Amino acid sequence: MLVYFSELTDLTEMQFIYCLVSIFVAGVVRGFSGFALSAVVVASMAGTLSTVELLPMVYLLEAFASLIMLRGGIRDADMSIVWVLSICSAIGVPIGLMATISLPIELTRIIALGLILILAVMQLFNFAPKFVGTRIGLYGTGLIAGIVSGLAALGGMVVALYVLASKVDPRSMRGALVMYLFIGLFTSLIWYLIYGIMDVRAVIRGIVFAPVLFAGVLIGFSLFSPALQVFYKRFCLVLLMCLSLVGLLSALA
Image 1: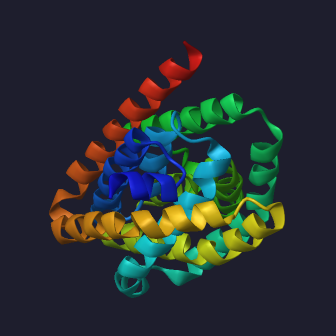
Image 2: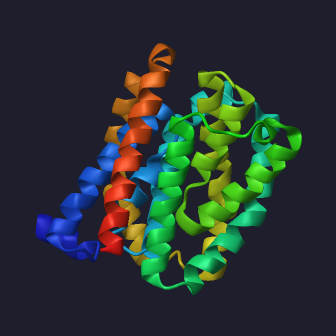
C-alpha cells in the first residue's frame, strides 16, 4: 500500500510518510487557528519539494480545508474587509508567481522560509505598525498578501498582521481568514493555470493527502475555544519559527 501511494504521488516512501505527518499537523493547526496550513506545509516540506511543486499542492489542500470551515467563516467574517483583501490580493499573486518561476529553486526555498520566520516573529511579538490597521493599510495588506501568496502561499499570515493591527476579535479574525483564503482559491487557480504550475501530479497529491488533512482539520476545529486563542496563536507561531529556522539553517549550510 505504501509503495503504491508513494509511486502514485511521485515521492519516495520516506517522503510520502513525512508529507502525511506534516499535512496532518498542518490540518490540526488550520482547524483551531483558521490559518497557517500553508505556512506549516511549506516550512516543513520546503526541503523535500521545490516551491513550484508545493504551491499547487498547498492550493488544493487549502481548498479542501476551506470547504470544511466555510460555514463558520461566513457567519463570523466582516465581508467588507474580506472583499477588499481578496481583490487586492488577486492583483499581487501573478507578481509573486513570476518571481517564483524565474528564480533558482534553492533561492525560492530560502525566500519562502525567510518570509515564514519574519511573519511569525512579527505576530508572536505583536509587531504590526499602526498604519497597517488603517483603510490604506487594508489595500496594501491585500496587495502584499497576494505577492507573498505567489512566492510561498503565505497570504494568510500577512492578512493576520492586518487583523492584529486593527484589533479584531478572535472569532471575527478567524472568520475573515477563512473567507479570504476561500475566495483566494478562485483567483489563484486562474493564475496557476495561466503560469502552468497546476498539473496532474499536483492534483493527485492533493487528492491522496486530502483524507489526512480532513482528519487534522476536524480535530483542530473541535479543539477551538475563544478562551484559548492566545495559546493557539503562540503555539502556531513558535512551531512555524522552529520549522523555518531549521529549514533555513539546512538550506544555508
